[in-house]
Image (cartoon, rainbow, N blue to C red; front, side, top):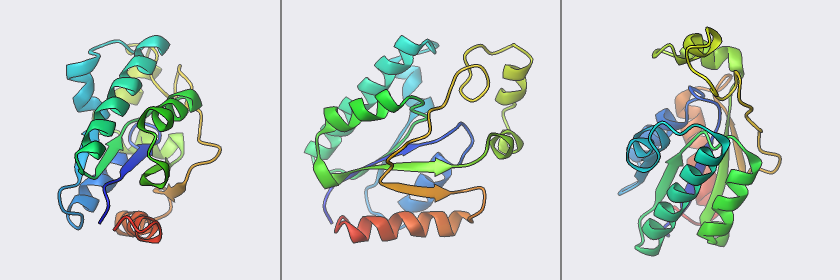
Length: 171
């Protein structure tokens, strides 16, 4: 197995972290870089465009460091702008060892899945700049892999990711 970085992007509650947790059962030492957890350390409470851009860059540099040390990593990060994901690809600069995975799910389904009530708070104006409500999510135009969590089961989505990684000789 070669180290890799799987950059999981999608709306909040689309299933990014859930898929990564499932992958960790089968991929030894797979590090999960969860955007929500890392935000507490790197960029607390700055959800401005500049803040999101900076947070994205910090996570990309951390992922690059893990890759350099041979640790396969899955980044679970909304990463809402096309520019964010292109910057991550450039910062990491790992060729086929980097893959952007779009975790596709409709806004309506993500809202149904939201156990924390973040979407409801955003719709009430209690949270400003929430991706998908009053801040855009720019869906990838050229993702290396797309998994549709609205229509496919967790196990099918995780298997699609594993098959993709095997196809790139990373597993």
